[in-house]
Length: 326
Ligand code: ADP
Ligand code: MG
Image: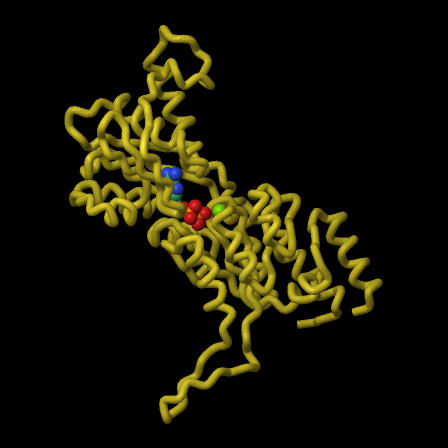
């Protein structure tokens, strides 16, 4: 394509809310064969809410449980943490009718003091509250801390995850204290985009830090067949490198040969700090405009309208600009 065609293409993108950072990215977009999507904030709207909670520890009241979780999560900036704090505030202000109604003031909620905070990206957080060791996060975080998850708790967790919800477990002094079920609606256009990409010859993948069951349930609702779950932020970039690798073929002599003709061109679509390494590792990084600055910086394209349909539109624009009829 001529420089003029690239300028025109970039301009058409801009008027349609697709920010294109460079000609190289625009050219590669037309050749994309795999689109890897992050889950939270990308396939989903990214506004999680608590739908349910349950206390397992005997002698621990619901409001005591909520105070501990609320205090712990006040130290995290994860969207799930924000959802939990909002829920805790509204629940506790129901109980405390006599106190001032300023829900932005945590002091009246009697949230306990939090010490020794340790944020574990993609898993949750640990801290110390009133002498107790507190762990808030996913199964892996609890398992790594050698917290035994009883059978009845596990069956609850499974039920929540099969409903496509995320389960946040809470342990106090290495015993499961309770859990919360979090939901985050899927973007209405997600399934349509996956189908459109498929018609364009682009295969969609899901790459998420969330657990396998939730990931599979969300993927199924979007029509995505290839799922990579329980992936750490660094693991997301490694997964992109894996997808970029040309398919291997084993010959009769056992020698692995690389097929150069079919090297996939991989796009990563993401919104979070967690996605930045994967956005940079991908042939084409596509950031959701509503995402974090770090993701936007790492990407080649920014979807200013935060509309997933613009993933297909960006590919289409590139193909038209570079006249690649595929
Ligand atoms: P995604 O890849 O879907 O955007 P993340 O990598 O940010 O998700 O997080 C993966 C999982 O780690 C979450 O689904 C959640 O179970 C858990 N997690 C991360 N941070 C927290 C937190 N502050 N509180 C509770 N759970 C958390
Ligand atoms: Mg995300």
